[in-house]
Length: 296
Image (cartoon, rainbow, N blue to C red; front, side, top):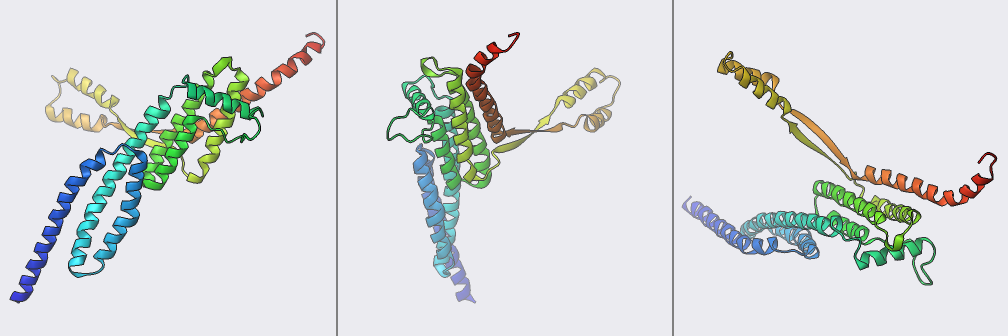
């Protein structure tokens, strides 16, 4: 019995030592991880932790004995680090959406050169060796790149929220670019740009198989505030208990749901752009014909 107790105590001390070592390692690695700003590096870290390090820790844990204790301690450590890496990656992806898509300068020389290139390709003037239909506006290309990295590295629930944000930002960026075409671009050029790039977005997001919509819930305290004001005005005629009961019965906050559907918004903007393009393309042809009609 004494030997068994000593063995258990020895095993417990080994596990405690391993756990302490893992905490020390976590304290050393976690600050470095949270300072990492490169999206590509964070994606690599997530891939290594998820598919290699954690898998090895699980195999070690299944071996039994001291190795099992070491594997269990490492699994807990790696799970925490993986969560931190994914959280940091989500933050950096959102920062990229904010800084490089929402705040993209459509007047910058690179943006204007891209717009001229897209316009030339879509009109069939891209020149020999060009690849019509493969010219993507910079924010579209960046947004699709971010979606691919998020899809491979983040849990589905997190990806669904982030994908809606990326698609919404890309659509808004294209609308802004169409309003600020270089060299006095016509409305036909603007609608052509929107049609081509919105089609690119719609086609390229299909493999992600996401709704690109999020539903948010919030509490509406308007009735609560009104009831509090009413009770405050009648405080001389109500007891404290009566006031509390009235507040609980009639002033409970309401749950308000709102949905942001980036994919639906993209479809609506694409439909408007197609209608505008048809109108812009047919008006120069039909206007002379209308002049020939009697009474015109």
